[in-house]
Image (cartoon, rainbow, N blue to C red; front, side, top):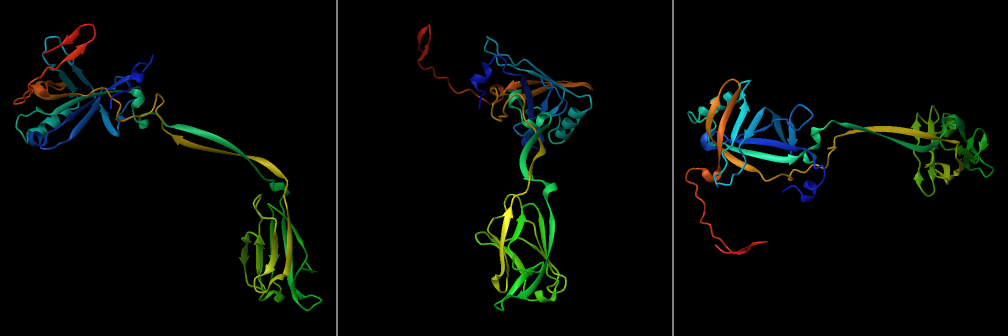
Length: 329
């Protein structure tokens, strides 16, 4: 997809990024490998440029002669690529084992141009975003830990009931954000596991440890602010009548701040778009002009100049040119 016209009409559309590819031909070169380069001319950072998910190696490359003249002759651009480390020579030597003396002739050379605003986000430095949230929580200073001694006794009707600290099935008052421990180590508790439930919300989560009548404890920590109001303690074997209700109160509260951070990468110039580009300019390497320790240069030609490639017969149809009138060919 072409770059949106609106982006080009802005006062500062952004830097133009030039990317280049050399695509081998299996028949000529023994593989279809694609080499990707950029010359770093419009980038602030060293390293590769990533666009449309493809990495373009930062490599000195100079391309000239893309301009179209008025004579009708197609451009034959010159492509010069750095060979300081012998990289290009090594590629050509590998290819020449398939086609002797090929030197990358016939390879497809593409010039790609886009804007910096459309590059992938991974090209830019990660940014740490910190956010702070405030919530109301139970004041730890107002919390308490209460231990109740539990025994099982008979009431005036001869029915078994829980006695809490010696009082037969009292109403218990609790406070959200605190911890309550029911000690059932007395031998009378055998067969009478104490639990806590909400008539509306069901069984409450308790920590149950030990053996009834020996060292059993039941620990309940009503959460702030979610613990229900309609609680009761009861015997799981003999029902509600062994226990009673629990009155639930709120603790003193404080405002607690929580800070979190995350790392993200974004394009500070715009939104990455792998389809936004100027029309691609496609040529084919025609002949190697120079090769030395510093540079390798090729002359390229348009696909229309390739051997055995013919233009279809042109059919001129009626067109209207503003200011000139009708044209018929």
